[in-house]
Length: 200
Image (cartoon, rainbow, N blue to C red; front, side):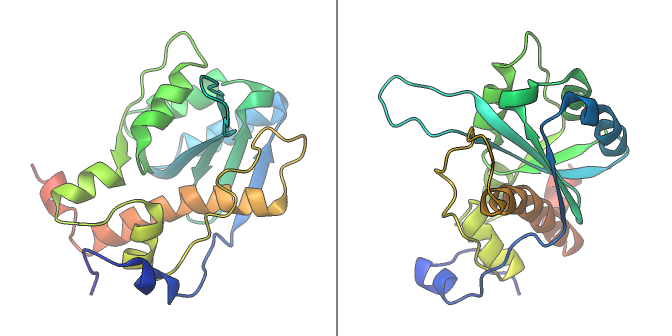
């Protein structure tokens, strides 16, 4: 049974979990096309972005990393190095691919700043949509605990996403965020929680 609310204490009792599939760090433009060809064939993708934290007032950094995940593979695009390639933008604009994230509005705004035109399509925001079906707690950490019965680490959240080299820990964290959104969506959909949203 999936609960609709959870406490911090309950989350802390759960075992740590993370994405255990293959991670692909994409920092060369030459590698993008082949990956885009693969992603364009997917029906549903986990989605997230990371931005280098700004600790000074008035400083706003651009999106550093874009994560797109299937159930077994996570692709981490270093946008601060390769820019925002058209082929990847195309995946995010495709109507027939559902991109699942949490609090996606800010992510989309951040990506839009990297290009002249970006028309995000078919994004499913877990935070917004799950409130509509009765979830009292949302956010990736809460939802992972309630739906996937695992605790995820947020320790890398404010690390430097523009570092010369992203550590394995950073990569695993970034992959887990996108992948877990996809897994939450899949489980809730299979158990009928999203029927009212999709049968309107």
